[in-house]
Amino acid sequence: MNVDPCVDNAQQQPAAAFSPPRVEVAGAQLWLFVELEPLLAAMLADIRSAQHRIWLESYIFSDDSAGRAVANALIERSQASVDVRVIYDAIGSQATSAAFFGELAAAGVKVHVHQTIWDSLFRQRSWRLLNRRNHRKLLIVDEHAAYFGGMNLIDPVEALQAGGAANLPTSAGWRDVHVRLVGPQAHDVAESFHRSWRREEHQLNRIPSRAYRRGVLSPEAESIRFFDSGPGFKQSRAARVYSRAMRVARREILLSMAYFIPAGRVLRALLAARRRRVRIRVVVPHDNDVKLVQYALRHLYSKLLKRGIEIYERVNCMLHSKAMVVDDQWSIVGSCNLDPRSLEINYEFLAVIRSPAFAAELKKICENEILHSQRVTLDDVARRTRWQRWIDRLAYALRAWL
Image 1 (cartoon, rainbow, N blue to C red):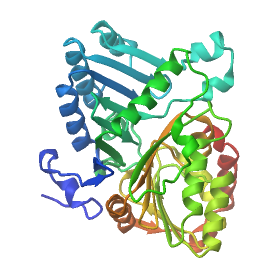
Image 2 (image 1 turned 90 degrees about the vertical axis):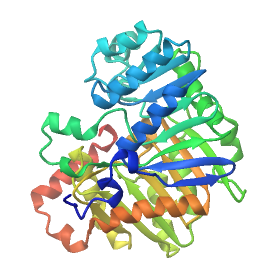
Image 3 (image 1 turned 180 degrees about the vertical axis):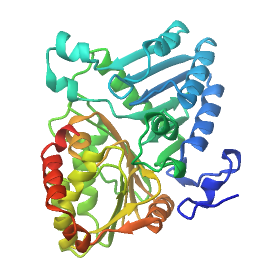
């Protein structure tokens, strides 16, 4: 077998042989996934064993091999009288036919679509609402299992090859971070889904949660806390969560981020951490599936590098993760990127996990990405042409719409 030096050994193994790292935190078992194939296998096993409920929320739910496998499993359980509910985003899933979701509904699956173009422009008459997307990725099975992270229900390599995305190296795959949780905290993830469901039924305008009143970071030795973020809040919960974690950092911040355009309180918190001599490493894609995001970030490279922030571009794959590790203690995983769209506009979901063991596993994943990355230097920035810098500035000006 040919081994790509920029692909983990685990990636070379078949899905059945792949064993994602498992960590116990606060009475729950957590599994970390970085690729779709083993994650999909775990999801399908849980779905097929469901007895009471399957609640699914996904920005993209595609009618491809991955999405069809999930849909078939949902249909089978719905016909067995399991409560099956699906929320998908109209823009994220725009390539999926109405007939696909019609099949689900015909089998008894309760389906909600988030913010169609018709609803935004004609029923609610608001361009602003059209820009608000549901970017969350959740799965809750019965009372015990929950999934959250950055992976959509789509085979990304299949989609890239079909779309002819020549700028992306489809042969090396698509890297992400997604978590399977088994434990009592699955109930909290279910509560988050239920709030989203009520919002889609126009029964909920604001999003209350006891967790927000308790603060972002738990004083307990080990904890798992979940946060919704989106337009239902007076201020961005996601920005608050990330910036608070950055402010407590004393030694190191490690970020693995698909779309990284820090601004506002998040950028201030990063720069303040550097003034405290905190080491900051950021891993981003070398080739992004959204090119304008890549250009917008490169507009910030000089500012970040001059302040001592280390930037690495992951090569030979598309890095789609949204993860942070602070001081080998705190971890943040979810659907939220550090860009204006995720922080201020979209509906998102984050988990804040205090556990040295979980942080160690997540750090291994992030540092593996660094091993297969190119470090960005000020010389690299200086070599960009005047035309490239103009494009970077234009992309940065459009950052809220990317």
